[in-house]
Image (tube, rainbow, N blue to C red; front, side, top):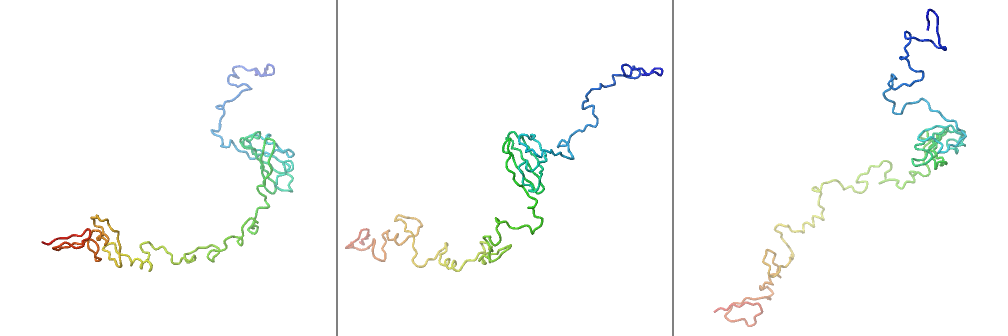
Length: 279
């Protein structure tokens, strides 16, 4: 503080008095702020917790990382010599490879799935998966840039593909290419979609129908036959000649019961004959 132009200090610090300094309005040199003390604090964070413009590669080119040494539930990037990580098939002439480590659970035990490494080189992609906490499986090529065609002339049939000359079906009804068949092409020229009510009757069918009698008031020719009712039948069933004969009526053959009217008894009657005596 200054008094009458003179500056007073105590142990190197300015001297204060109530007129020029109030300690209750000042904070300690070592202190903490609460969220309420911060202005312009965002009300929410991005869904991914924030973004970054870049991701750093770890230069561990001579190390073949063990699955158990990778960070659990993280993605990490590493710069590697191809030979140090089992020479992934991403370019035979490439000295280095870029490795993406994918650890969904952890590399110490595989209950959540063992970690996966994706290798990127100058000529393609490959991947491998851990088989234990201390070992990796073999590299498997995903793609090779030189194998990717850039024009139609590069597309050819492999030995496992069927060529047109080797296909089991060469043509249909003498046609090749995009085929649309009609009923004539398969020998069914007379087949159409005529409704049942309008379908014609063939000559043979009509001839067979002509030999049939109508159900109402039928007229029979030749020697029609019927089932013979029982002798005691008293219904509207058709009476055949056999049924009539069984009733004891005289038939043209002369057999069966006879009815005689005479003043004297027949000389040689048969069982069932009737004789009426005239007096």
